[in-house]
Image 1 (cartoon, rainbow, N blue to C red):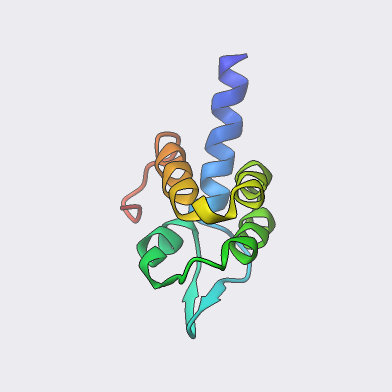
Image 2: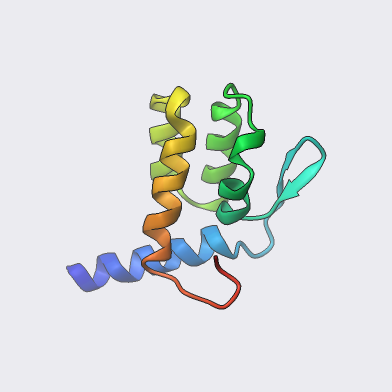
Amino acid sequence: MADKIDKEMAALAKAMLHPAGKNPYYLNGKALYNMQDLVNNLDDFTGNEGAWVAEWLNYLGDEDVATRIQTWPDDFKQIVIARCNKLKEYHTCDKCE
């Protein structure tokens, strides 16, 4: 069971940190291509974009985090940071911070 979860999380991490063939999220004219880009630019969000961020993360493949953000939109920044850190536990590469 743990192996299955690890494989699923590794696949999700790859999809969220290196999304292939997915459109970026645009914030103030700047393209954010993956979850790390999102984390790196969280200070640029005014706080009311949680619903849009949730839709984009769902589009990239993380339905679970999208649901959490939809449930607690005011906490979307903390939710995104926590999820990104968790995904990094399952995916490492030279390009990832």
